Image (cartoon, rainbow, N blue to C red):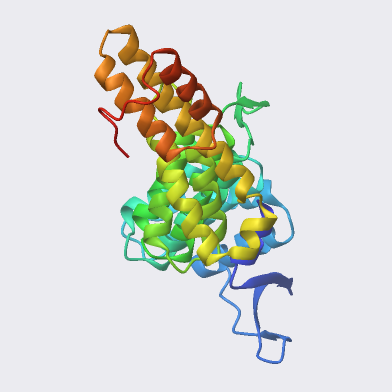
Length: 324
């Protein structure tokens, strides 16, 4: 967490002769001193908070930031910066959940400010940590035992709503889909990857999104007695993936082996449907379904069983009710 706070600071304040001197990085890579803010001013206090954060003194930075926010009126042009720094100080001190309240204040009260985008990006980093298993502090902040996965899900959705079309939104989209994939919510994962591919067709994450969408659809199939629409879609997606990424399709196992598995699963689903017709006494539909199974999945185990059923009932030579 401290890493991205430090990277987010555009100015670094260091002590010199009893006041905070502001330095900026020049074009040649060297630090250049700019005009030091006058002691006691809002600019000075902001620079002091930034200096403390850069030094890793998060607790002291939080103290000063809290006082600064309390002293500033709601309409102060510095308030968005001060509230953002207070959130940064809390996050740097390991109180990222509390920091979310400050970032939300910036987002809701100062949507036209530069700090708005930064606050959304801060929330994205927290959401990613939570989505990957980081727990929230509970019992007065003493223990990290609280699950924050639902909060992570909500934040990842908010980032996409608040910064549509941005790199942050793109990252939030793939992280959300990956989160669903990790927790084995394959229906939501499939939908999230599909939405990601629609919104970001040129993303560097496109290959992963396409592959995991296929795997999610395959995993959604619960057996021959259940809906097979996910398998049918997976078959179509495999062809698209193989056309776009032929080498990767071989390396990742999207080859004949997976297609054979899908074929067997789809055939088993059709066989189960035929058996249901037999149990209900609808022999015409059963015969039609068995013949369709053989025509569409001729090399499957289910097709062999269909041939056996047709032969046992004397339907092997009959063409009545056939279809493809």
